[in-house]
Length: 400
Ligand SMILES: [Zn+2]
Image (cartoon, rainbow, N blue to C red; front, side, top):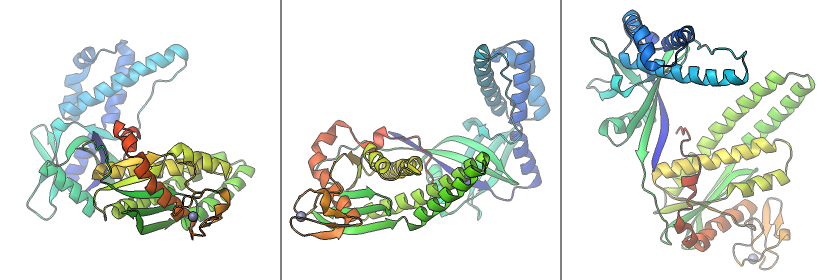
């Protein structure tokens, strides 16, 4: 199975000439606009025809690498064809136009990452007519680690995009890795993960049936943040400011995304503390039901946040070669993990007290232990490839 993630690195203090070159590459938007109008003027969607019409003129005038011109042409043809299809339904459909800062995809024929001997170890090497342009890359420790792996051939470099944000240029590198499919047997150590509102996650390693290494990730900040956003949105809604509502929703999503990245990262760090870990989570539909039954307000956002957290965990696990399995136990929150007695009355808000054996503990922890224990019951049935990581969104653009 191939996994893909995107690493963002900054072009480090490019010289004037290099800046000009990169700005020129970004003019592919101008190039695409030109192709679009050419196709309209000549009533053609033939790449060959376009090539004859424009190739010489455009490559000469813009001094762009042939691969960049070709990619822009292909993209423009694709867009023009879908424009024609849309026009059949709505004749007044307008021809799209690109803004100047459209990211440009760099073909592998004209882009590579190489290692140099000076202090800034990695550079992006872009081929141009008559030579190469070398741009030093700037990143954090994490980005350098990925770059090192690309150069060493441990990770494959997929598509590369050049993006301009403000005055700075960035490269978005898609890195690919092949991970083996794992059919877990009984030899794994389950790490049960319970998702909730008070504790966004509660995770526990079950070693030889005994819970150890408990990790609570409290949602205090997230919960407060959401309440604040919800109140703010309600006031905006009363004032009829719907665009502002959309903006705050976007902001909230970005905050939640950061929180989810941090939580999933620490769960993976926890799992890595044991040998042969397998992460066990509840199947998402189950969590959704539970949330919908609870709070109506912000229910959408809650279930979205849970889905994302699960995806992040599954993705990071897959990347690390750790299997993930999903269970659908009905009574994870009502059952006593010691004696198995199941009753709604066992749960009293945030604490759990067994009505039969009297065992008392945190309710979320009890659920997490039950989830981890379910691994034993479910493991044989999971051999048929029901591993969650495989059917969840694996093209997710994970950021570490
Ligand atoms: Zn009990």
